[in-house]
Amino acid sequence: MEEQQQIENTIIEERYRKPDGETGFRRYQKGKILGKGGFAKCYEVTSIESKKVLAAKIIAKSTLKKGRTKAKLITEIKLHKSLHHQNIVQFEDVFEDNENVYILLELCQNQTLNELLKRRRRISQIEVQCYLKQLIGALKYIHSHRVLHRDLKLGNLFINDKMELKLGDFGLATKLDYDGQRRYTICGTPNYIAPEILEERMGHSYQADIWSVGVIIYTLLIGKPPFETSDVKTTYNKISQCQFNFPDHIQISENAKNLISRILVLDPSKRLTLDEILSHPFMTSNPIPKTTHISQLISPPTAA
Ligand code: ADP
Image (cartoon, rainbow, N blue to C red; front, side):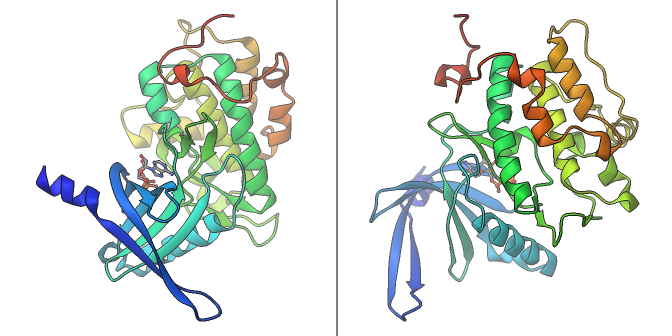
């Protein structure tokens, strides 16, 4: 308890030097822990000067000894810093001291779609439409800047206090030098990974992110990922054969089935594009609210 108290009272100090040589510092009060990732611990922090509340990803420098890990963090920072969009977690600042690297991010108070789905089991079509519209907006933006996210999954789709969806975690993102370029590194999260990423020599590009969007839509509507099995190898086999089906006991619309089936297509060139997803009947057959309601974090929308 005492230790906890101590952690929560820590002040993080950022010393800076402006281009004109002027120096100063900003201070942040460390608050509650928001979560732990592979390398980072994430805390709520409050700026002492502006009172602004942010999320701080704290990465111990001792974990950055491998050159590759360090290079990845530098890429993540460089890419994320360059992105500005209403549906992307805003990158606020980065600084370091002897022990840690601190990345300050826009705070997303309402966790991610992963926790939301665990509470709700599955969500309704109107909610999926609403989150999907925001996600596609973020993806159109990053793709137009030649950035691939490469780790789209429910746990990287954050929700802020206004219930806006914010795409985050650019740890596996990459920027292409030109549009037709392909990447060959195997990366991603097993359930969401596109078949062309597994087929290493094919290379992958923007369409690999769109595959993961198909997995996300299916998972939100059905309640479990389409290629999930108890071991990764079997999951990869199912992905490579695009082997999934819609369980009989869960009712979803024909539009939803058609949309998913036209995104989860093995040949990346035959997969729907982001604009085609937006103009698919699944997205156009009814008006879509700008955000979902806060009550929908824990219970389904009530019928109007
Ligand atoms: P990972 O290593 O799992 O990709 P991160 O290191 O990015 O995760 O973050 C660790 C955890 O901190 C996340 O799982 C999430 O719970 C929380 N987190 C990350 N960014 C934010 C944010 N902007 N707002 C609120 N919580 C966040």
